[in-house]
Length: 93
Image 1 (cartoon, rainbow, N blue to C red):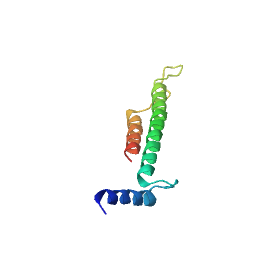
Image 2 (tube, helix red, strand yellow):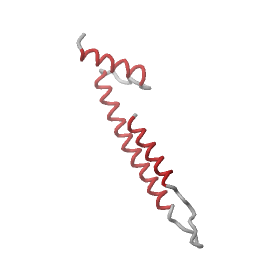
Image 3 (tube, rainbow, N blue to C red):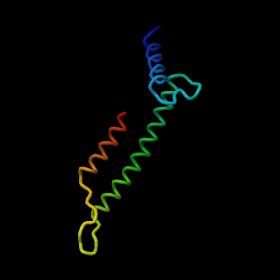
Image 4 (cartoon, rainbow, N blue to C red):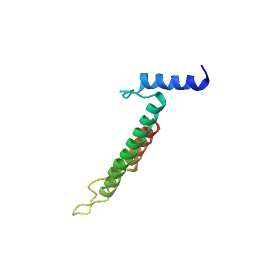
């Protein structure tokens, strides 16, 4: 068995053992990996957009004031930073 075959076998074994619900189609390990990666990339973009909208909304609301001029919502930079860190962690997995 050459190095390429060993790598493909290793990929197939990883997918079968460590990727929930996979393999779900009758395809080779490489095709399955490509499909999974494409799906995950699309999901990350979707989550980035959703999180970005939430962060923008929270940031806008952090500057809203009531009739007495008092901030009614105070979103710290720490909260926004934690959200961004969580997103970055998800994209690396």
